[in-house]
Image (cartoon, rainbow, N blue to C red; front, side, top):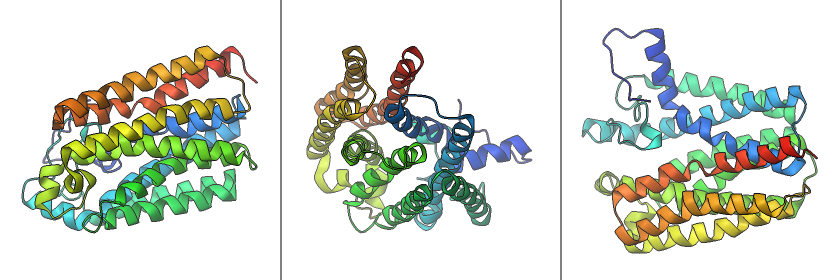
Length: 316
């Protein structure tokens, strides 16, 4: 998909692309694989049509709202960066496939972006409640944590930990949507696996690609605080924790997964996460940080694919 070509006479499709850019929909669609993976690996079969339909709609609405919330909370600083020419260009990373920060760049008004986010948040809240009231609590917690994450931009590099927690909540909610009483050990393993994947393969590499503009704006991110060498070590350490934790998730599932599935999951992790992380630890370049972020984004999608194969070949 190529970046948006901006038009002085916007059509409906053009305007829709701007709203989708606000919610980083290409990335959001990939992220939807995470809760699908979580639900399927726990129950081992496709749920009823009503749960599938409501779950997919709620998941899409939730990710759409939360990603838009990021730009809403960050609007003042993004607007300042846009005036300096730092916010609008599409950099080639997955989050900028359409356009980066369409509100800050003046292609959407703040009121339009806010209305878009609120509408999807209401839909997500209704769907979450219908699936399980616990899902509504988890969704509300995710929105609150996302706002806190954004507000910590100039305050603390430990905001990375908040991001790790936010990315786990969709998967946790999906478990409660299909089973009101899941295993606590399974939830802990799933939470930690996704937590370290987000920190090592998503958040820190993404901040790495913005280190120059973030530094000039007074941001406090982990790459700015610790530098390239220590950041690459934290990335590698996080991924080395995420991979065995993912194996634990498979083993703690009540569904039996034969060694072939465990090997496939480990192989996907090595290819998508470990290899680019090792390359980054040697090169310490912005390009390799972006490569890790882009490739690592597909990790939950491959996990979903592995679980889907098992589900259709030998459903529980």
